Length: 226
Image 1 (tube, rainbow, N blue to C red):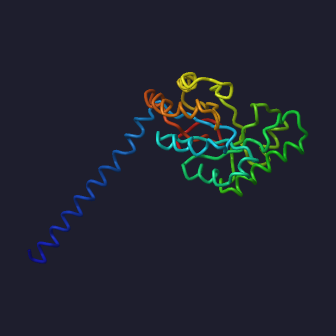
Image 2: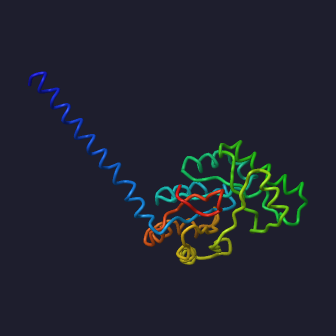
Image 3: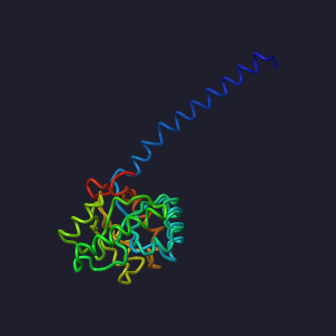
């Protein structure tokens, strides 16, 4: 084959590759939009990181799910590698106080300590600076809100409680996820075995309803596209 023919063949191959790439790129976005046609929901897991975190992250990744991990500061400080693993797995890390107290029973200074130490512990562990805060037990008041706001945090409660902390079965947890609608958030926890077991069916349930697992907007406090 002459040098001219070689160059012509190479040019044709390159053009074909570009065509395939362009086609793939142009169809990927519409396909994702169709899959998420009913919107986005927020999967949240409280009280980590724990001895169950590695398995939970593996299950979430295997099933194509992303979630917001509301970590306790004391556990983030004790297990920095697990915080980094959460980030590496594509999760978002948020603040769930340092020791999980009833914040509404504490002084402003004590509330400040719970929130600020958690911000620092998560940042030191490689989880970035959280922008979302969930008060333990969902208990809040004006003082809690004002302290959280001082640290640039948006308070996030939930729309659906999976009751996994209360011994809910895997089936019940999946049914709770099935109640979610666009923008809503579900409360789950890092440690229950039944929650871990529910992850594959959570993914199936969302997909069957045209919903995707999204991030939580600090502006609106609702789930949105990542």
